[in-house]
Image 1 (tube, rainbow, N blue to C red):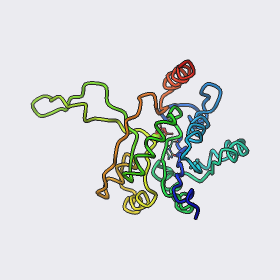
Image 2: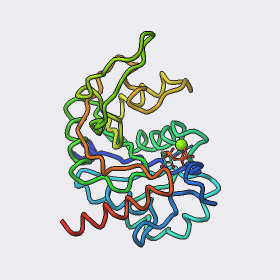
Image 3: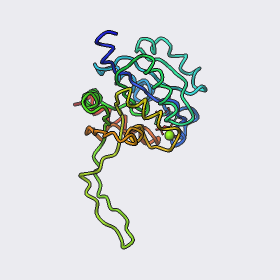
Image 4: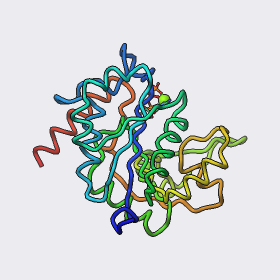
Length: 232
Ligand code: CTP
Ligand code: MG
């Protein structure tokens, strides 16, 4: 194994959802964002990150024919398609199996629905995972947060609160162990699965611009953010 392979980072890009909340007829990831489909913009961002080696993208069986129209682009970008599952974690697991086969040292799980992540955010999360084994990009909560109690409510110190985004980067061996331990129990994300092993998960501070396209209105915001990037 070459030194490069030993330090390699494979991106796992789950794209096998159906986009229920987005409400379009097909997968929301096919929607146009300033001239390119959402998933392709996401892949291009990951490709720009110098630490990234291969990319594996779990897709739904029903979307195979759509993606077969992009065969050449996918191979130029070194993107490998695998079968996703009914739940996001099943899609991630299928990408993880591919990465394990490839002997990747690290995996970076990144939602195909987050096309605005920056190269700096990707690299910072990878750098932290190389130190801590597990690192997730997170965004500080900006609002005032209160916790309901039996008497009323108390203010929560928001300096302690972050919302988890992606990429979430792990040593491949650690995420593998987390999935072996998972056995289908409910978890909100891969960070939670890793935490169940008693491992600390580091957070890297990201920007609120790394939105996950969920509702149609998010596309409007995403276009504005892209336009502002071009002007800066
Ligand atoms: N995803 C996946 N496999 C699934 C479900 C989701 O690979 N079974 C992917 C989505 O394609 C998306 C990412 O996980 O890139 C984050 O999921 P989300 O934003 O919730 O997308 P959807 O599940 O498609 O949308 P919704 O929950 O509104 O149906
Ligand atoms: Mg979903």
